[in-house]
Length: 351
Image (cartoon, rainbow, N blue to C red):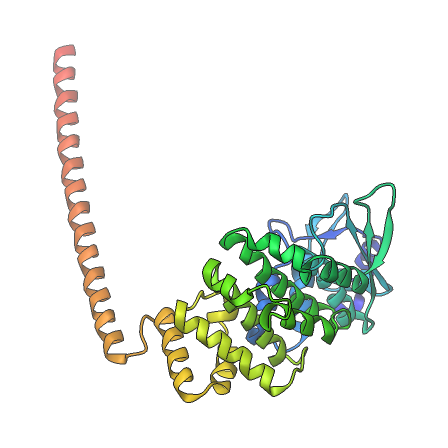
């Protein structure tokens, strides 16, 4: 703490702090949007820094929500284990994003601050007669095999609508999140299993047909997440797999227009990678469709016309507002004159 600028007296006092949380007035870690926008960060130090600043406030009798650099880092120095409570069987490490956000977030922060990757465990209490402790990797694989890649689970979700389809893309995002936060817990076999079941359709569940009918934007995002995982170097499939993923993604964008999540539209480096993997004819259509959503059109002339139209509409709106304000002031002046006349009349009567 002293190395971070904390006075010796304060360092001694703050060394007894054990409860840390969000800075007063804030909520949450603030890292999920950053993690998923992979072209906005280069290494885990940036993610850890945001976690520290958002979750490093101390809560003591004297200080509530007080943040100063060095205090949380000091408290984490001897940490070698992270434990997460689990008291329900309706969610797991891959089906709930807040698990990778908090458990993964503090794990990545400890690794950055101390240089050591802490062990991670779930205390599974959803069956009070059979409480157990699971390592994070075991919990991830248990959920994967029990539901995520199991035909029975997938078929039940397929009975739902667009929201049910979105559950699948959430699982892909969370798997990527874990890969960023705690790379050692996500095996190559997990990504290959997801690819086999959802992209190659090795279980003959009609996955692409299902997504195209119920929610093509979910499959857009799933393919984009897999491509970003590849771009970041967490998964290294063969070149044929990578190109087929890019073609699937670009085809969905062409047929249904972009859904424009962070992964699909708001990720310049990933778009550039996908574009480079496509044949020329697919590349042109892909870029045109993305640009049409992001900037209105890929045609500079049309963009110019659109801008002129927007400026005209803005000027017209200003004119209307100006006229209305003038009318309001005129009305207020009339009311003021009327009130003054009434007041003078009343005074005369009283006199």
